[in-house]
Length: 497
Image 1: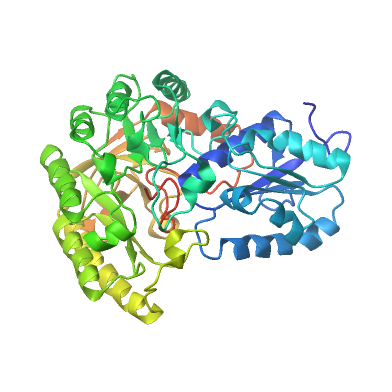
Image 2: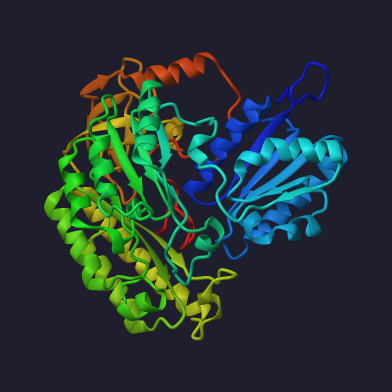
């Protein structure tokens, strides 16, 4: 395709606005790659783009209000700029389809979760035909990881191993929008990781809506454990993480692979959702409290240093005080390093939204505050156990929002804890490794204010420096710098299995 232009010389610019889970972030990197391959360039931060792409999420109760509010703000901008285009993709587009163009007729393109590769052609068709193009596919056309990409981080990367989900959790709409699970072949995944490592990447996060169900499509129940072990054979790959597993599919062979593969990090995000067996049954979560705590116990036996985090929903329909006390019991027993806690709110299109026994808002709020207070206390106590420990930290970009004020840098420990440290005298770049001693602990981070014990310059740091010396405008993808992405609402696709 010839480069789209706004004049005889200037290529058209684009901006991507990403909402939702890390699968959407991964898709946005592909959308950026597709647009750049088609000749578009990323818009500068102060520049009004020629094309705005919304990659939407459908799990929030007010997701559509947020989208239409943003589209409304863009309408006068588009009216004043002939030739500007607006595209809407992602889960909300898959769900609402033609309704988007009905409610916002100034939108040019609507595309779904299964055909992100069609975006450049749809934009061109809308421009030529001067009418909205709506194309929603019911099945995956091209696995996202086979498409061109524009990655935000030169040292840490997502690698999708599957898309879709075979679960039927009553609070989650994602399976109906992303479809049933589709698995990539192991050779394709490993080839992508090897190519990333050759470019300087040190850390990969294996990504799937139910990541440890990997292999179900081709009938190998041990495929995920085998994949972790195979990652351990890739020279130059220093850190491997994955998100998010489901307790139903978390088997002992995965625990063994984590413990026995040196570059698989001792961090685990294991969604609990509720500690009550009765509520878990209503959620259609196919495990119970005893099984969940058994997994935590076996992980800790194999990896005593592992940091375990979770997701919890408070106030699911029918939740009683006794049910909530069971959740608090699991939190006390599991001693999570951190938890993403959510007040239940109706997700349109989910079975839970129609259930009897919706819990009053004030009751949900009171329970939520008790849960947060308990988890904050536990997180702080667990972080205090890190005092005096020597950690190798992968230096990150953008992790420490107060770094300028505190004159610190930030990065992630092997167990994914966030560490703020005093910079050494010698230059340190994102992607490099520093060895530090923990001097202070807070509930959500560690501090190392002593001298840096060692600096290890890496290929990843070289890649970051090379990118900086060849500046390109940054793409707004919502991409976290490194480590586990920011929390999403309960039921969000990849992050909260």
